[in-house]
Image (tube, rainbow over the protein chains, first blue to last red):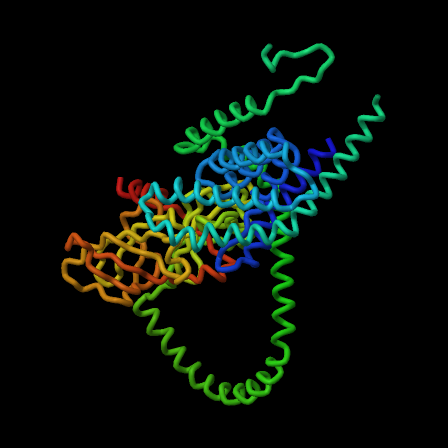
Length: 172
Length: 296
């Protein structure tokens, strides 16, 4: 229960920050994707199921406010969370390289999928322009934010896991 | 044994691949349903409106306050110098003003004669504040702090500073989403003010950095449209009210088919620094219907 509340608060705060504060901190009109960081971080920290549920909620939230139809973002983010969850077996909290690599890959693939489905299919073929001006800057900015956000997520997750272990012991 | 069979004394858990499958089907169905209709929008928009929008409003206010304070600190020195200069100017201007007052009186009288009205004075407008912008980098839409409770509906036109901003595409109880005309998925039917030729104005992500949008399908048979001409919304658009200024032609060239022309225009609205907008609460559809009633 505590975990669900904490995760819900994280999602809300990140979503609100992303569409208010980060819009004024935008570099070259590009903002980082906090939803990807949350989805993929919880994916590889906690496993496939949690990753896909958090991805679904994050995506649905952006769909309700900014999507033209529901379910598009939710579907992409859900699969990103699920695939990140596959890496939870080789995840160690001490190692920062794997999380960074996973988050960047997730953000790049999110950008590519968005480009293909939203732009390429409408006949916008200047792939290099969109890659250099939107997808790549977004991924880079996302890494920078990850460096601050990820340690926080890791710490909170460790605290939650310790709390859950304690409760489980109490019941035995 | 199937993994979903419930064992005695063990808590029931659904394996993640089944959950993934179920949610994928749910998403696909949702996409198909909401592509054409807006069945789910009302309850979801309402729920989201009560959970998220208060925070967004708070952050918006806080951000505005902080920006104002920091600007004040920067400006205070230059303002002191400016104040001296302005005092001197006030004296000169007061004298000039008295002269102009007389001219204005004359002008007002003349205006009444030709019945010049305020540009968009005939429409009912409601002001609203922008509280959050698009969470992604692909499209350009934003959320304003008023919604169905203030009588807003989808497809209402939004203007600011005398130019067209966009139209409302989703409404919650206390928020609405405005899709701007510079957004890559937006197309507006427009016309040139000087020659009344129709054209299509489309947003373009690639030109957004240059503060431009594109237009096309302009049939300019008389070759009279020139750079700098005003483009306004056309009469044949079914979403936009007629004669709202969109922008000014920036460049124009002949298409490869030698029949139509296309080019770029500079929007009349500064989308970068947009904070408050006006929502026109008259909808195109209603106006047309009223006219029909009057005619019949």
